[in-house]
Length: 250
Image (tube, rainbow, N blue to C red; front, side, top):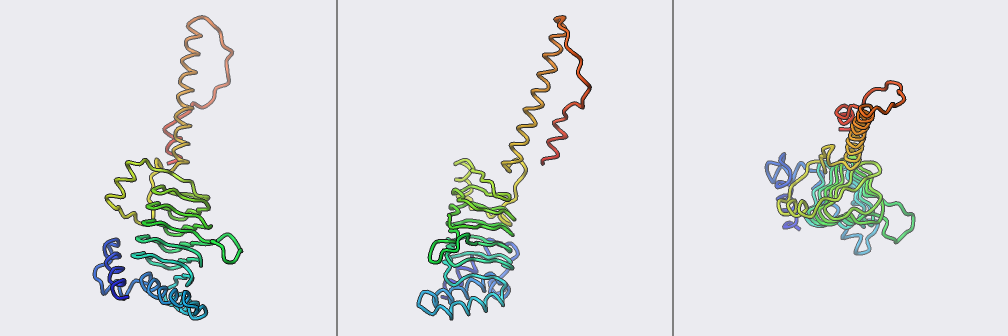
């Protein structure tokens, strides 16, 4: 048990720039306290002491504001940062080296007892603050869920899920390999620029396409006029300003 705690502390110090000493982490990090108490509750749950497991998890909830069902499976070096308001359901599985921020829910969408109702997080997943991952699917290895995203379908390995409902952005293989090698820690899950948001990317492309078509139409009209072909005058309308429109969707 103590070796696991030392491992957890070292992992937190490695990933959290605010963590200065092991003693500080051991005494002041409610996410670590919740993980330790969950191990006790989970042991009771697996050995038939269901009520005792629930009671320990309830005490952990009072003390840390992190609610982990004793039936949930939590891997090694899982870091629950800040922790306040985190809820992890009974059939949830959290893989090794995952990071979960405050306000996250790993919830279920089925009322069927005994079924896999809650999500599985593969190794190295990062779930941003306030995100909701709902359902019995898998969030693939190294994937990231942005803050306040609502994920209701599977997320491929290395992909990013943002928005409500979440949109999946699959990164190229080379990028995934670089991030896996560097093991970059993304604070609060994901900080995306507008260029990485799939919706913003689509809007930018549509605006640029419309601007290109508008320019082409002006050239066609000028060519027809030079050729002596008369065109019916159209009411004046504001010209498309792509730069202004692109700024609106940034």
